Length: 380
Length: 155
Image (cartoon, rainbow over all chains, first blue to last red):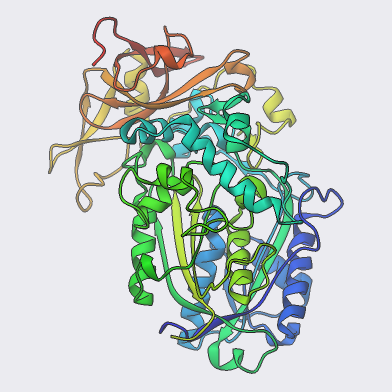
C-alpha cells in the first residue's frame, strides 16, 4: 500500500457503551456495523470483505446479509482490529477486496453471548503461569511494571498521573463511563487491586461495539464522509505469556510495529499531532511513549506527569478517556481507532485543534502482539 | 480448564468453583522432563547445544538457532527477583490473603513466573534483585517450583 491510497469511509460505535445487559456480543457487532454503513452511505451489497476476531467474521457477515469473498478472522487480542485494517489495506491494494467491514462487539461486562477467555491446561499459559494463581488479566499484564518503575525511578504518583490525565479528557466526553473528577491523591490513597495498581489504574469493564469500513481512496472520494487516509501500518508479536517478554522495560512488539508504520508513512514522531495508546492498565502509555520514540528512555512518566498529554498539551493522548475512563470491552483497540478517526474528521467529543495526523498503538494479549496505524485527513 | 472473564476475576462458573486446590500442571510432551525433575526436587531446564545458552519454557527445538538441538540440564536453583505484583483478590485456592506473583531471573539467565514463599506480601520485604532459592510446592501428584528469599544475600 502506498501511503494515502486506502481510506476509512465509515466509522461508528454501538448506540450506547457501558452496561448493556440486553445486548449480546453479536448484537453489539451488528449494531455498530449498521451504524458504520449508514455513516458511509453504503449498503450490505457494497461490502465484499469482512474482518472480525475468530468465528465472528463469518457470523457477522451472515447476520448482516453480507456475502464476503475476503475474510480475515485474525484474533490476537485487543489490537486485532488494527491488524484487520492493515490486512484489508493490503488486500484492497492487491485487488482481492474492494470495500471491507471491520467489526467489534463484546459483552465484556454483562457477558451476554460472550465466550470469555479459556486458559488451556496444555498451553504455555496453563503450564507456566496458571499454577501460580493468575486469576485475571489484572494479575498478569501488570507484572512487568515494578521492573520498569525500579529501573527508571518512576513514582507511584507518576503512574497515577496517567489515569488522571485520561480522566480529564473523559470529563468532557458524555459517552465516557468514568467522568468523576480524579486526583493523583485519590488514586494513590485508594485500595490496591494488584500492587502497585489501584482501581483507577486498571481499565473499565464494559459492553460495546464499533465498526469501520475501508476502501480505496479513489472510491472514498465519491462517498459522503471526509476520507481518513491510512499512511502507514505495522504489526508484530512477541511472547504468548507475559513472563517471557524479553525485557520488562520495553516491548519488542511495540518497537517493531511502530517502526514499520513510521517507515511506510515516511513520517517521524514530530509529524504526529494526536496519539492513541491502548491502555488496559496505566503502565501501557509509559511503554508506548518510549518504545514509539516520542520520548527518550525513562522519560515517559515525567512527560505525562507534567501534563504534556492532557488537553492543551504538546501531545494529546487518549483523548476519549481511554480504556481507563472511556470504555474497555475487553478488546479495546477498535475504540482507540474510532477516536483517531473522529479527531481527524473534526467531530470528537473533546476535539483537539489542528489535528492532521494521528498515531494509534495497539496491544494484544499481554504484550503478546502489537499493531500500529498512522492516519491523516489529507492525502500525502 | 478454568475460564477468566475479560478483565476481572475468574468466572464464577461450576468448573472454577470446583477448583479449591492450587492447580496441578499436567505435563505436556515438550515439558515432561521439566516436571519429572520437579518431582525429584530438581530444577531442570533446556540449553541450546549450538549457543550454549539456556532458555525457558521447554520447547522441541532451541529458539536461538534454526531447529536447534537442546539438552536438559539441572541448574543451580539460584535466582533473583526480577518483578512482581501482589494480587489482593487471588483465586480462592491462593487466598484469602494477598498472593505474590513474581517473575524471577535464574542464575543461568532465563526467567520464569513463580510464587514467593517464606516472605510477607509486603513491598518493604520484596526489593527487586533480592536473592532467591528454588524449592518445590507439591500439588497433588506434581511438584511446582517456587522461590524463597535467601537471608543475608540481598544484592
